[in-house]
Amino acid sequence: MHSFTLSKALQKSRSVIKIGFAFSITISAWACAQTQVRTPILQATETITVDAISDEKAWQLAQWRQVDQLLLGENLEAEDFTGRYKLLWDTAALYMLLEITDDVLIDTHPDPLIKYWDDDCVEIFVDEDGSGGNHQFTFNAFAYHVGLDRNVSDMGPTLKSTDSTVQTYNEHIQSQWTRSPQTQVITWELKISLFDDTFLPGADAKPTKLSRNKEIGFMLAYCDADKAVNGESTREHFIGSYPIEGINGNKDLGYIDASVFEPMILK
Image (cartoon, rainbow, N blue to C red; front, top):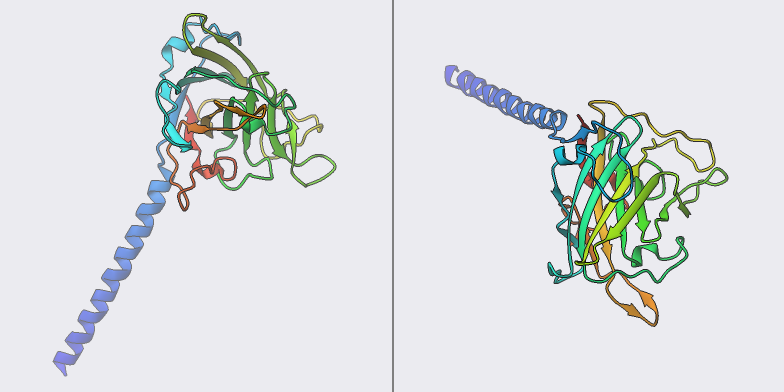
């Protein structure tokens, strides 16, 4: 009788321990999610002029971050492409300084609504509130393609339809770039206005006013096109700034899921 009672007590004790252990793991996972490390973006200490000269002292305070994650393509050599970037912010926008080395620049699609990803272009992924999630056919986040002609292309719904269509968003990003006459170094400078998920083209939307401790999602990538076949270029490499864990080997997920963006915070 006593042995049976003791055995049941031990089983009950073990069950409580298991439940407590599982609860502890759940709490720990929740705590990790709440304390996610976010990359800081420094506030600009002066007005940034978008001229690809980057002579403002504020740029000297920002750290270079590498663009070195191969998301598509094979056998990427340093002679073909290298990249690094910096970010700053003020109440109006994010500012990006991008320095790349690219041995070949190609733009064979003059229409910014047609195969813009198959030309050399800068791709900027922005999630205004850092919430993550699917954005392929919505404005939950943006995947801007900034072409060599400085047109800005992406997909999304319109005022007239919830169907996603390719459009230009030139009012969202102001850019300028220069190429060194002595080397293959290209310098981009960009002003990126942030819009929340209520944005609709033509709806007189206003960009978000930025402030300290605002959390966002951000990722940068470069579409590298080196060859043109029958007068038309195709993307050879796609290089990102943040590691992505692929699904069945596919790492090209930024245009679909904002959860793969780098978590950042304005400081």
